[in-house]
Length: 119
Image (tube, rainbow, N blue to C red; front, side, top):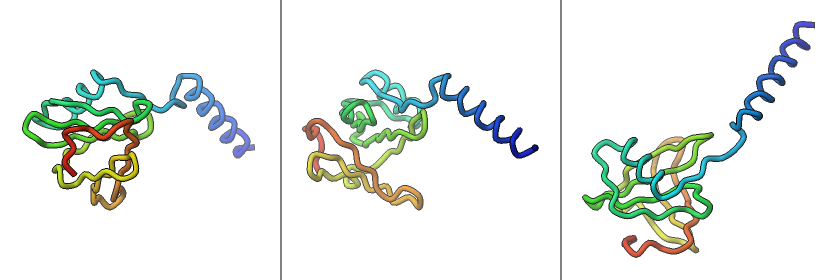
């Protein structure tokens, strides 16, 4: 009986979250990418933005030459500041070496290679 009530509660909460819109992946526009990067990376000021296909992430070049990377995580974003040497371009996609224990590498599909990408 307790298991059935627990299952019903889990299904109810899952359905409620789905109805509230938590089922969708976040999408970025250029203005949102700049706001997210500048808000999450201390001292970062964006000079140029390259959005991933479908707004599923972004790579930004800072005014100081540093690189900001926005990656989707659940219904939000994670932001990382990287040196330009951590980026590469392979087969129409940006490859970022993060070297974090849970996220060694990230790949973003971009419509075109950014002209400011030197890797």
